[in-house]
Length: 222
Image 1 (cartoon, rainbow, N blue to C red):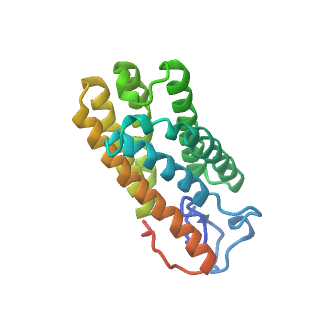
Image 2: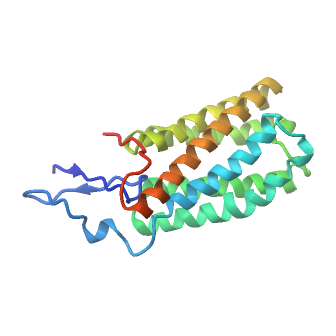
Image 3: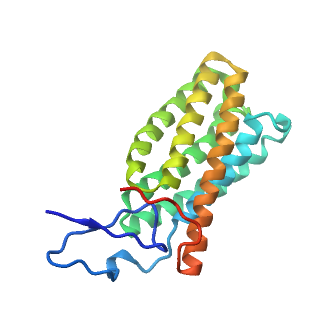
């Protein structure tokens, strides 16, 4: 069975749609390509970006650690619950990549909130408890690594998010296991880059959808 990929500037950039009907391909989008709900990717990316940015500011030591609890509310509600909802809506749209990504990282922030608030005795940064946080971060690095490979079929912006997020996790894993403040700071700066790229991707979805044309490119991949 052969197929061609059709890309619409206002459609979900995390979804790759396959048309396999025989005969000439139509430029008109099918009804299945535009479900009755809005694209949740902008919301999910925005939630991920903001929560990641705040935590990364702390990890990069740009502000005092006493401000770290600020991230907990974001981790519970915006990065956690809202991103999880975005993942559920992606399931509704039939987008496996977006559903797995948003649901999983929503669960990451919920588990981060629980880990810091209860399991870690109120500590505000994961690297403070060494091997336990290293293991927690390591499994997320593995998950991000294979999602990064899948992102090679999405677009440049989304791929950039996963590349920098993977590097962020690697640096934080090293920092946790080796008790290296330098690695933690590097992880913080990489997290800031990740957040900015995610914000750009979210912004591009909102703007392109609103203007019904490509205003901010995301760089389609084959």
